[in-house]
Length: 402
Image (cartoon, rainbow, N blue to C red):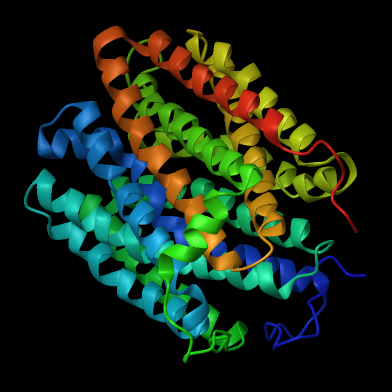
């Protein structure tokens, strides 16, 4: 059975080549869907200087996208089964180019944050519906590889998005950076249009529309509740590190210039290789063990972030990124496999909790960073990872069924 074999019922995605090509397209779709989300973090110091605000204020404005993603994730969950997902995904990605380009003209921090919220809403709509599509088209044994490929594309967007953002901003200015990403948004819509089959509504339109009923069913499931909480903790920790480490790197003793700050994000490169392993490990050791593996790797990297030696800091960033992305791949796939019905709603609820955690993490860790410094901020991140590990005790310990 191939890694991305699809079920016979319904139309499968129109991916004309073999398994590796399927996984590549899944990853590229994820890349183009969320490339805007974290790319702007690479130019946070420059943006803070442009708007004349504190690191915490600029970090909150940039990560306001997670608020839009949290809201849109829930709304997408409610209507996932009643729409042609391909058309909505395409429309979301093409429309995403408008607020992305608009960031180049934002006159103040409030407009900037508002445009980021709109960006987040459109990204989350595409993200949620794509996850629902994968969850329903893939067999149980195939889904870990498919979801790992999707999260790997997310990892790649973190790396190359930041590299492109820092390079373009340094060469042509901050404004030009946003026009480049608007073009990538349109390219994502074209890719989905060409590769994803239509997915007409599978819900009886004569049946009453009860959007909250599916949400309540998923909240009543203890394993799903645990997974939602774990997702909250994962992005809380990830943004706690990778939002504010930028300000640590440009300050003494590291004193990195903007082009070098972009190159720092090659720390995500190992995650592109390690994240696909998550699907294999889940299939052989189960979700709980796999989550602990990812969280443990991330925790191991945190003490290194406090070093005055740049190589040690970079090594800590490598481990923090690899561990959190690995855990995210495990949790995302677990939600889709565990939800026995309306996987779109389950994926939307997970992403809503995940991105809410990111927004809360930005605010909380930002406040700690400003008041108590970087060591206290890193301690707060460690607390979030430990909390995720404890919550994982509620997940079943066994292997994924074939």
